[in-house]
Amino acid sequence: MAIRRTVLSSIAACAAAAALSPAFAANAAADYPNRPIRLIVPFGAGGSTDMVARLLADKMGQILGKAVVVDNRGGAGGSIGASEIAKAAPDGYTIGMATVSTHGSNPAIFRKLPYDAIKDFAPITNVMSVPSVFVVNASVPAKTMKEFIALAKANPDKYTFASPGTGSLGHANIENFMNLAGIQLLHIPYKGAGQAITDALGGQVNAMTDNLPSTLPHIKAGQLRPLAVLALKRSDVLPDVPTYTELGYPQMGDGGWFGLVAPAGTPKPIIDKLNAAAHKVMASSDYLEKQKSISGESMGNTPEQFAKQIKTAIERYTAVAKRANIKLD
Image (tube, rainbow, N blue to C red; front, side):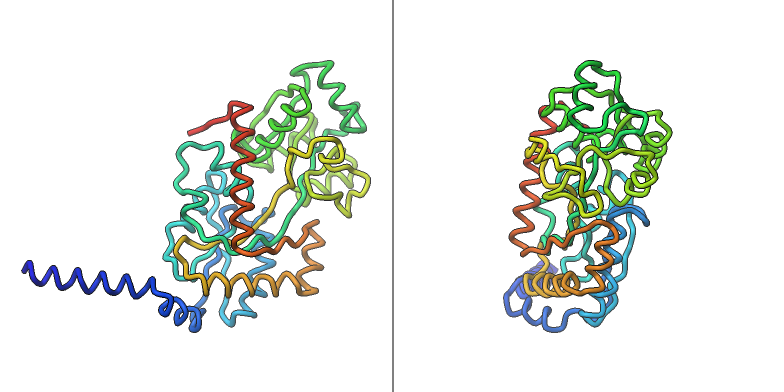
């Protein structure tokens, strides 16, 4: 019996070694994909991450010759879906969306994440940057960020800001800004962005920050007033609204982004094939037109560059969490 177990163990070890070999990886990539690919979105349907994923999925499926099927796995600020991506078989048939929340602020703020944002993933590419915008209710007597800062300094804790929840990206970004601007706003956390926006519209809270696609209709309707955009450059749809960098706060960073990741250990030839397919999608006129409709901008890069971007995001939000004393279980 002992001899049989030894033989079986040897066979398993040989199989594992073969699976990790360059020749095996190359053969796997040559045949890849031969069945549909699952694209996990760690947030609910209809949100910004889901919109980006669905823009990608259809055309990537056409390029790869097999369907790319979106699977929404929301909950716990993206942690449930991100964990499912990390634990999937590293064979290229389960990939997922990574965001500045799941791979930036969450690792910096939450002590007990069910995944390691660096060790458990193989970055594929960043695909899109979507600006976020700081808005105030139309009743707030400030037309510019300079005026709002003056109001907040003259009235500490009088003005409130909404977030989708304690420890969320919206919370972290405003905590960062308060520290940089030397102001104090009262945080009102909600269970999701929808209710936060509703109360910002109703004037129950004075300010908030959220992705531009979610707030733009209310800005156009005159219910919310934009004071700053978190992005590398001004938005084409809000050309008169300055970026935080223009206002003197480059430490706020470059805004929200969405990318593709696979489980750690996915063979590099498969990662490269997925990267190439995503870049073809991002170059298509149809994709570019749809991207424009949600105020997005293509941000394609190499797996190595995306890995560096993730590391930079974690470092930035770790510093924010330390300054604001935000650390959650």
